[in-house]
Image (cartoon, rainbow, N blue to C red):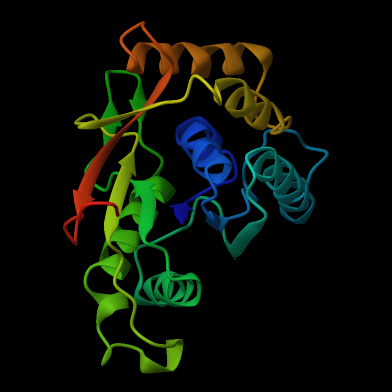
Length: 224
């Protein structure tokens, strides 16, 4: 399962890894907190019409990566807060789909370099996803009406300044690029080229890669 704030967050982050996993037979589910209904400067759109377009773009991008299950929670873009209500929604998704691994965002990142302040929706989703994963989703006395408790085995953090795991996406970098290109309302050819360059930088110039901080909430065993 991947839990993010906006359509295109996955394509900027972990789409190459998701495509690699689905090719290996894994089931991947996307949980998108907002439909990006504030994500345009174009006056031809309303909140409703840009949300419809961005969901269409995200659905097409996911399909390229072999992902056909997407949960759109439709929170308001730019207004996401780390509330108990949002935590309940994430817990419900975890208990419904029972993922072994959840990929999400880094709750500690406020800014990057001297030119980018992390979007408040990214921060809110990251904090809330962490709280939903550990410990709430796995606690049977917490929200029993949301279904049986489920313990996530691993948490993978994308867009982190302190990665410890690198996934070789040489076989899926072109899929990642085409998936990103599906977000026509948001990206240009220059954006796609920039994300390709990020992948090569992550792979130390040797191979395109995606970088993560991985937490093992349940230790791996041989063959798992």
